[in-house]
Image 1 (cartoon, rainbow, N blue to C red):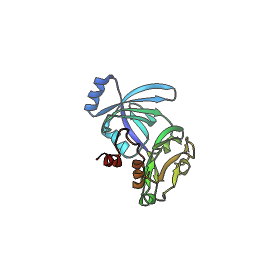
Image 2 (image 1 turned 180 degrees about the vertical axis):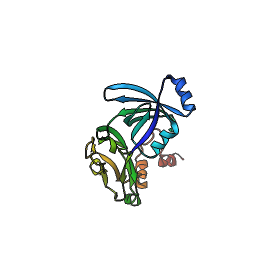
Image 3 (image 1 turned 120 degrees about the horizontal axis):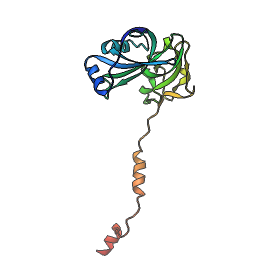
Length: 210
């Protein structure tokens, strides 16, 4: 998905001025790549938020520059509620790029109702993908995940033309049995096997002294 994003040249720099920009509703950004000059830009916060909501990773920058670009990195504040800075990379729609894409579990695993624990071991994967087909995320369906089953990288559904840059056998999510707590009788045996305290009188010895 490609959307248009209006940008302006940014001529002010520094943390203090960037904070003023964000207070005024704009976000500092940079555009780089293809061996060309890095350009400092600004973009309206509400327009960029709309692009993120739509799940777009490719944008057509308009205004101060006219470039097709990939949203390479988004820097958020500590609470993940405000975008602090954006990195754009120049790309063409058919160019392949390497990106990391989030894995999101979908559905309900039958193994969970069998008493199992669903554990996600891999939360994102590196992809080599046509820039125009970079997904916002990859959904991993767990509706067929029974107790003892696992889903690996090889099972992922990828965008057309994409290649995952991770070992096919790497486990994304599995459903395992919970670790059992020690049985009561095992605990009793452990207590029965406690060493005798030196100097402590046994019950029969105390009876003999009376």
